[in-house]
Structure formats: C-alpha cells, structure tokens
Image 1 (cartoon, rainbow, N blue to C red):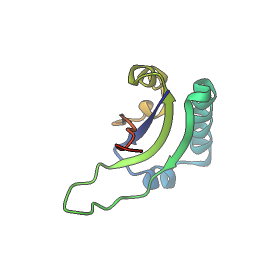
Image 2 (image 1 turned 60 degrees about the horizontal axis):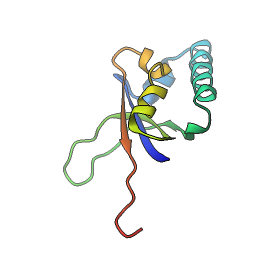
Image 3 (image 1 turned 120 degrees about the horizontal axis):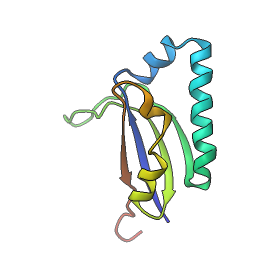
Length: 107
C-alpha cells in the first residue's frame, strides 16, 4: 500500500470559510466529511485538518492549500476513486491535488 498526500484547494481560505459559516452550515459540512471518511474506511490514515494561510520560504509561490489528508491505497487511481464524490468538491472553485509520498533514497 502507498500513502498519498491529499491537498484541498478552495477559492477562500479555510479560516474565511469557517468564519463565514453558520453553525448549521458548519455542522452539515462536518457531517458530510465524516460520512465520506466512514465510507473511505481504512484508506484514511490521517483525516487531516484545515490549514491557515501559508508563507512561501525561498522565493517560490505558495500553493494556496486550504487543508490536507493522508490516504493509503494500492494506486493513485484508487485514491482518485475514493475522492470522486468528496464533499470538498461540492464547493465553488474547489479542487483536490493528490501526491504520492515517496520514500527518500536509503531509508
């Protein structure tokens, strides 16, 4: 099994989204995430968390990630299938990036 970093991107920062949501909207959002996580089962290594605004170090541009998860699956295609109807994708302007976690040489 391979681990994958899942980065959630959105038009607004996670902080902005949480600040503007009503308690009912926040509960509905968390309920949708928890339903997805239950359905994904053991593939969820770390459900992750929302991310605050990042800072780019070294002169490069930040990627604007709003949150992350770590999933484990047989292949990137299997992870994509797990994310096919992820609740994050129901937000306007949202996208998800999946990256395989590679083992450093010699480790």
